[in-house]
Image (cartoon, rainbow, N blue to C red; front, side, top):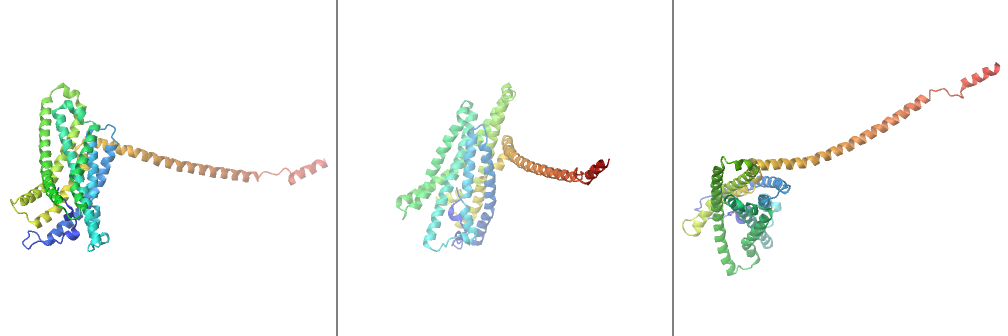
Length: 388
C-alpha cells in the first residue's frame, strides 16, 4: 500500500526541503494534501453510514454462508481503516488538537502515535485485501469444482479462514510496531526494514495481478458453464440456487473491479518507486509526495463505497436490505402506536371523568328546582284541611 503516515500529515510534511530541480513546488504539494483532507470527511461519512448498514443487513441474515462471513470481515476492516485517520485529520485542521511539536516529549508521543496508526492501518488493509482475494479464490474453486461447494461455502470454514488471515496480517505488519519499541535501531531491525519494504512492494503486485487473474478465469468459467447449461432441463429445475450463486458472483466481481480500479494509481506509483530503488529510473521525490494524496483518495474510496455498490449490482442484497428496513420499521411503528394508544386512552379517561362531573353537576341543578314537601305550600294545604 502506498498510504503512509509521513505523507498523511500535512501540518509539518508540507515543509519538504526538496532540491530546486524538483518537479512540483511546495505550494502544489501542500494543495494536494489539502485536497486529501477535504475529501477525507466525505469518504469517512460514506464508509461509516454504508458499512454500518451493511453490518446490520449481514448480521440479521438468517441463513449464514461464507459470503456473509467474508463481507462482515471486509465491512469491519473498512470502518477501522477509515477511522484510524480521524485523529490525524483533527491534528491537521486545527491547532487546538495539535501538540507542541517542538518539545521532545510531544514529538515522541506524536511519532509513536503515527507508528501505531501505521501498524493498525497496514494490518487491516492487508487483512481486507487478503479476504477479498480468498473470497475470489473460493468462488473460482466452487465454479470449477461444484462438488466442493458445500464445504467451501460453509460459514464455519469461512470464519476459520478469516481468523487465520487476520493473524497473518498482524504478523506481516508487526515490523512497524517493533521499530517503535527498539531504541537506537539495531542492525537486525535495519535489515528487517529492507526485507519488509521488499515484501510490501511485492505484495502490492501479487494482490493486484492475483485478483485480476483469478476473476478473469472466474468470468470465463462462469460464461463457459452457462453456455453448457443452455437448453438443459436441469438449469430450469435448479433456477433458485443459480440465482443465489449469480448474486454472489456479481457481488464478488463488482468488489474486485472496484479494488482493481482503486489500486491502479497506487500500483503505478509503486512501480516508479520500485524502479527508482533498483536504479532503473529515478523517481522525483516531489512527484512522489504530490501523487500520494491522490493515491490515498483512490485507495480509501475502495473501502468507502462497497455498501452502495452492493445495493446497485445485487437484487438479492437489495431485497435483504428492504427486509431489514421493514423489520426495524415495524417495531418502531408498533412503539409509536402503543404510545399513541396510551395517550388516546388517557384522553378518553379524562373526557369520561369530565362527562361524569358535568352530568352530576346538571343533576344537582335540576334537583334544586323540585318543590320541598316541607315548604309553605304544604303548610297551606294542611291549614285548609283543618278548616274543612
